[in-house]
Image (tube, rainbow, N blue to C red; front, side):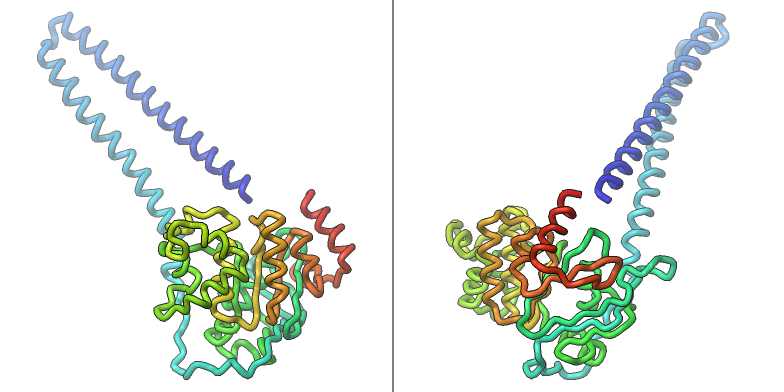
Length: 342
């Protein structure tokens, strides 16, 4: 996908270079023709030098305006393209806020179950999730592995209600999420997704989710569980260090651990981790895995690194949008080796 995107950009840049070269060539040729013709008329005394100079000045002004008009036409076309891409988001129907009182989730068990779940991005595409069925027991840690494109990240987005229109049943705490309500589901579930970002503000604000009544002791505890507290303590402003938009001043590994601390801050009953340790070195990954293992919460983990996968209680193989089999640690290690080397 990334290679295709780069190739498309290169093709676009080549077209722009050819168009610019063609425009320069056309205008240069017509300048040579006009000046030659004008000089011939002046020599034949059919045209005065002053009239030729005035004509060339007005021609240059006209060329400048025409060139600017052509450039602006291309700019307008690009703006329309970007507007079409943004319209999918801007014109999308917002989630309807429920007027019902917030559901009490304290009494619900931390189980997660999918029963015959199917999902497709459009009516004309194949099912990305195709009859997926599995169950994660309360307090259990389950790793979900499989080749790229098999639907691992998609099932997370379906569970969280980010992708609407899925068929089948998803149960959290034994209740269907449709009757439970997405607000209650999201309060029960903490997530670290591949495309998660940090926001402009301090580290403490990002961990607490900009909570107006943030608990500083719990912020520090979450940072310790995410194995980032020591590095934050070494920073000049510690938890008040500004991270910049999208975590600009942090390394990839630091960003991932702060995102994990943010997921833990809400005290979730279920934790969904999508490549949450992909940017960590071996030492930090082991520390994070130990901390996650010690938590008394249900965990569903997507990973490609053996250290993280083998820390789970159960390993499920996903193929073609459904659970294919349950793997032993040896089988999972061999499969991950082949996937990572592909």
